[in-house]
Length: 525
Image 1 (cartoon, rainbow, N blue to C red):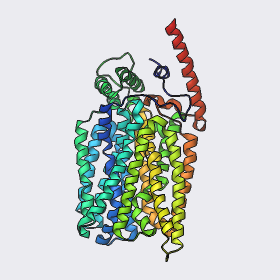
Image 2 (cartoon, helix red, strand yellow):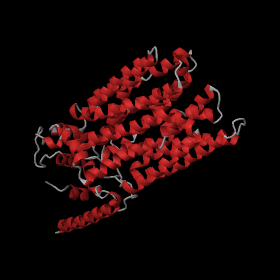
Image 3 (cartoon, rainbow, N blue to C red):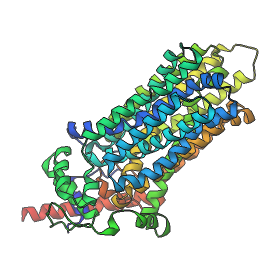
Image 4 (cartoon, helix red, strand yellow):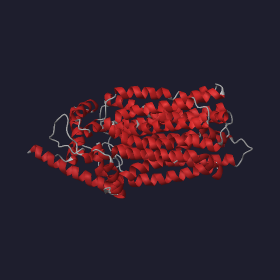
């Protein structure tokens, strides 16, 4: 069986610089792009729910007469419920495949949106939130996994980042929905806001019926012939399709010289109980490093408090001096527009500059923005009887800067990175746990934000988030190697030395250089 490292040499994978290198040149595969777009539509479900609830809860609180604590629970619990959905989806997509898991996400969220729209009281509304949360969890786990598995390596970052693009687009749709349906009577407006969320779930279900299955899942089921045909459609060339298939077969324990259409796959390579044991009971150093990096990245993405900025933006703008409902909702729409514009930066540059450059730049900018927002809101809070136009404008700018810097790196990189670093046998489980951690922390932040800012002031809350983002920067800089340009089956070799990963990268590059020189000499001979 061929050595995967020696195959990597012939592909000319990566520069010797672990942080920055020349961009790979490739033509985007339109079929792979279309498949990923369909899958990433599932991210609209989370984005729309986040955006629509930020304004909808104003009218839900008035109509159902709920307290601030009930409002916190209403806003945040969908993320806790989605934690359960992500964990279940990790097993589901191993059992029934990536494609049908996407379809299930659409069906579950449709039911949840329907229940929320027709809720007659708080308890009924919470049931709808529970069902919708399970659907969101399914969607958030499966979209980046499918996208990374269907994509050619040269544009994997570009394609997988569409998860965050569609989240942002969904947030914007939710904000716009708030503004227009707010004109209806209070008891109808918020119901329309919730109910419209069923539309993208129907589109997602239909899309799942026409997209192909993940070739990596097909190989794990022994359906090598079907996987080969899909890889030929989603690769940049026939040679790349053959190389990708060879790597996948090796990861699945299938001999390279076995060219049967249907083969038997060793049970220890198909996930399940063995995957849990390998990740948490007897992990190798590489698997432990990968697990810490993937789950830690998703933890810090939400621990930075970005969802509090997005979900509670009307509350923040109210504290900043914008008093009318329409003014708050219009200001909130600007947040959605900013997120959507800046996500395009990462979409087009993830495969050019790499994950680390955008991640570190984004996190540093987020730290500055959160600290600035804390300063602006503190100044306003200390002068309650004065209209400080400069402080209001500065706070508004810092809100936009927060979502802009987050969207250009930390937002999309978390999904791209966590979906590509886990080995094939652990990918569904690892990505599911990373998504679960992401949703858990988001839920905790949203369910405690009002209580937090009442306890330490709203400015103090954002100083705290800025401090957490500073710790995140150190974590990313220290433990996360660059993955741009590498095949999914080549990721494991980057990990295992933790803080010394740079030395590992240099050793791998030196080894590839020597093997390349040896190959050239053999060719000349």
